[in-house]
Image (cartoon, rainbow, N blue to C red; front, side):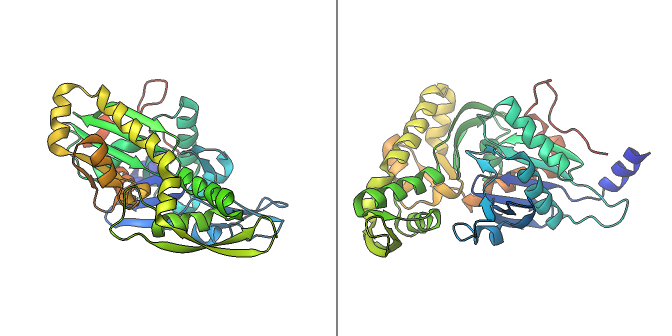
Length: 357
């Protein structure tokens, strides 16, 4: 009887697509578009284990909390590192867009993007966290497939498409055709790694210790993968490692580009490897269609130009690249009959989608 009511009232629920990212979580609600775009950060009281803040409010606390409060990111390299905190974060985001009212209030169907290189255990952790957080059914889709759908690529057709999704924890490279992924690569080098090399650069060149937020701000402001029409500078603030006092230095876009060269080379080499494995017929399609960039990391200045020079192919950013995975997951949730072939399977061979009563 409980399941009967759940199904009856669930039919009135709006489906939800989630990009559960290392750096940010985006939530797409059927009929309303992107409703949440917040950092994947949770602030908790270490003594009581009570959650104090989630999302944007919690990120403001990073590096500024007293000893009793810790601001943590429950996902690392695209996978769950703290199950309980991830469940609480998912619960908060799902109920923020889909509040439950009354005994027979509806539970949504939820589609969540996962990195293509995750293990079976990591898949199951995301699946179970979504169900525990209040999903009626939970489905998983590989992030590059969701990104391709969100970018409007013809994934169900015989024509080949290539997407490079650069997130916070992982970079996903995939060639799609006929509703499936033909070639895929997943590496744990992405936006977070770029922030880390900027922190190391400031430490080594200026004896300046800077935080993650300052590194990210520097990357967004003057970071680039290709020479800029006009090179820029930014004031970077931190602590002098010799004196221990506050210090500010001027950093140029040229030196930040050099610092970013390591992670960028790894990403470019991964794209080359995927192209090497692509069947000739699909390669002909890619030469015509080009390579699509998605994810927050794709917003790095000059990245399309650099990749185009390295691959000798047309490279362009998707429209609103940061939201591609969430929009793709939302499109799948809204039309499961059409997209059921693209869903990831759990080990027992069935498509992810177990139900909570």
